[in-house]
Amino acid sequence: MPVISIVVELLDKPGQLLNTLEPISKGGGNIISIIHQRDKITPLKRVPVEISFSVEDQKDAMRIIEKIKERGVIVKSYNELRLLATTSVMLIGHIVKTDLSDTINRIDSTGFAEVVDMEMSMPELNRPSTAMITISATRQDKLDEALDILREICKTKNLLLVEPINEEL
Amino acid sequence: MINIAIFGFGAVGKGVAEVLHYKKELIEGFIGKYKVVAITDSKGSLIDEKGLNLMEAIKIKKNKGFSGMKTLEVIEKVDFDVAIEVTPTNVHSGEPGLKHIVKSMDKGANVITSNKGPLVKAFKKLERLAEKKGVSFMYEATVGGAMPIIKLAKNDLAGNEIRVIKGVLNGTCNYILTRMEREKMTYSQVLSEAQELKIAEADPSYDVEGIDSAAKLVILANSIMRMDASFEDVEITGITKITPESFEVAGNKNYTIRLIAEANKEKGFLKVSPRLVPHHHPLAIEGTMNAALIRTDLAGDIVVMGKGAGKYETASAIVSDLIEIYRRD
Ligand SMILES: NC(=O)c1ccc[n+]([C@@H]2O[C@H](COP(=O)([O-])OP(=O)(O)OC[C@H]3O[C@@H](n4cnc5c(N)ncnc54)[C@H](OP(=O)(O)O)[C@@H]3O)[C@@H](O)[C@H]2O)c1
Image (tube, rainbow over all chains, first blue to last red; front, side, top):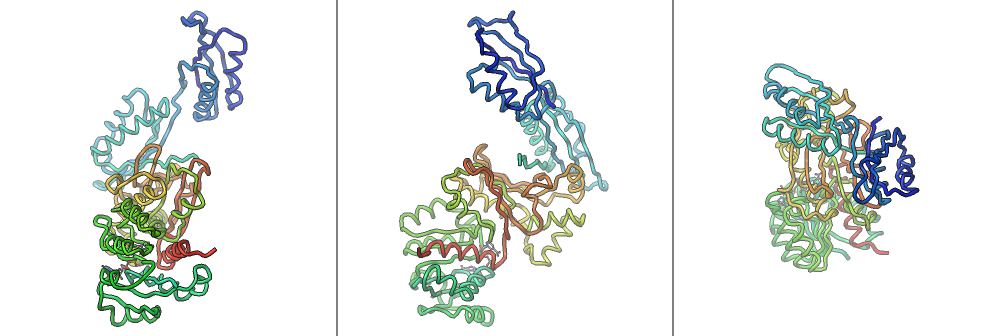
């Protein structure tokens, strides 16, 4: 279960915190901790509050944050405490000959995404091989960025990239 | 009395003729009396303003072939209310269908077609011309054969905005991929089998390179998504590089591989490519079937599925267009 940490800026008035916590519990999140950062009060007299909660999956977190924003609360930052977005893609072609470790390195070296799993099938020499790789990233948009990088790599290395249909059904 | 002209007398043209013959009573119940006054092929035509005997026409086509007036001359000289344009598809020039459609509309006839070429090449032009001339322009059969999608979107989903369409739009590719997965055969082995079974053409490139899917995608994007798309906008990858091992590797993660055509209005792209599809997904269909997932703003997701080709399946779409034009309340 991913753990999310957000920082909101609240006016120092009653009801403010509740206004933020409600969408979290209604959206299926479990609140783990609430830390008032009174030492970091803003010039407009808002108090930053760091709230951590866990959710079933990342999409719930995005929905919850949207709901919080809809209530007029300023969400200053949003972090997952783990790699949250994951996808599997397939590469077909001369994967080894075109330097597989370089391909993986270029994902890993982004700092926001890494190859967390790989399965290969190599038939005979000189025949195209197949690899299914699983990439995880800190956030969905970072995962998309990593996929963009992979698309470019596959183009230059003449590998077929088979992407998932991406369907939440 | 509705006078019909059929341009092109191959699998689909003959299929339509048979349906118009055998189901005459049923169809006339919907639209009133009709007759076929002209049929053409690449060499000539059969004309009878009093109405052709359609079974006889199929025999003549088989035994001695057509002669006499060619299609363009027929359009000029013969009186008809609706043209059924079922000549071969050419996605690059749109011809010969494009000229047939333009000339028929120009003289005020309604047009029904299964030919993708003219729509891929000149969708907007044809839509505008039809509007200007006050004629109907129907093309259900161009996408998905018998699978209802164009009229479904225009009628039953009217009022929705279609945001994304993902579809399996080529039965030949789907057959090849299904067999590769099931029998662990290579692409070329399955291809020869498919050619023997007449599921794939002698020159399969049009299907397996993704061109046919891309043409259908462009038609959907223009007609029911208002995307103003042209063939060149589609990023196309075919299925020729898929290996039998890829299905095994994909299967371990519970995926199969299908050629998916996607028109995405939200992200603004058109793409035909092999994709990983979860085994339980509605687009993970088998054999020569076609399917499409239509994502709308109001109705949510709609999935349709059906036979993507075949003479009667395609005739079904054409006849439903005919009924849509002339249906009496
Ligand atoms: N088959 C299917 O299941 C299916 C499904 C959906 C859509 N479509 C589309 O429907 C159309 C027809 O398909 P089909 O399978 O019937 O093709 P087909 O069997 O190859 O028949 C094409 C017919 O068009 C005729 N033709 C060629 N040039 C002509 C011209 N200039 N004027 C008049 N007739 C001409 C041919 O004449 P000859 O007989 O003299 O060669 C032939 O009779 C194609 O555009 C195809 O893409 C087919």
